[in-house]
Length: 243
Image 1 (tube, rainbow, N blue to C red):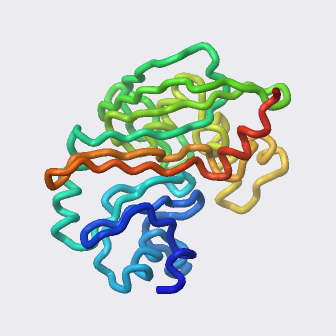
Image 2: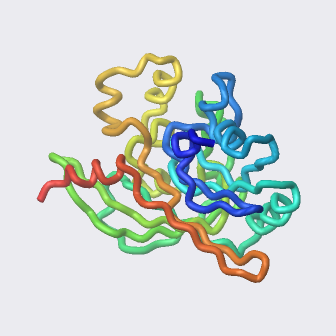
């Protein structure tokens, strides 16, 4: 299909597997706005059929690696693999602050935030599902009078919004996170299309700065490893750092 390059950023493709670098601000699941408005819609256009199945998923504003099985057999095998503990995942995140730590592991259970006005919001709670995330600071920098850090993030579990919740929990929310950045009213205004100039000044970026950078696993007697370079939103933000 001549339009494939415009539909998807393909990292790998063979008879069983399609690996893509999903851009930020694209939902994974079908939407009512046509096939181009979702990752699975674009996958189906690329493949020319409806057989593609997403093996992993990312939040709308999170960019990076997504695996797609081209048929049910591969989907079953890869789904079981992803549900296990042998898959290695690495993300890049830009957070507020963070200069005081190097590497740390966050072990904090996650569940629904029943006190929040945001229906999809989670939080750290004692009766939640076990979750563990390791973070390593790569650099710290300033833009104007605000301090930021670039982190490598490795989740050992895969709870909804896990990385975003854990980083906010330790006081270093992801830059641009409308839900977990400290004022959920920013998200509520955003979904009503009522964001203010003050909201965008706080957020600093259009989409939150979380990127699924690498993914590795062993499947069918072979080691697989994929990487997706930092998107322009990351490099543009980092380029603003004070020298």
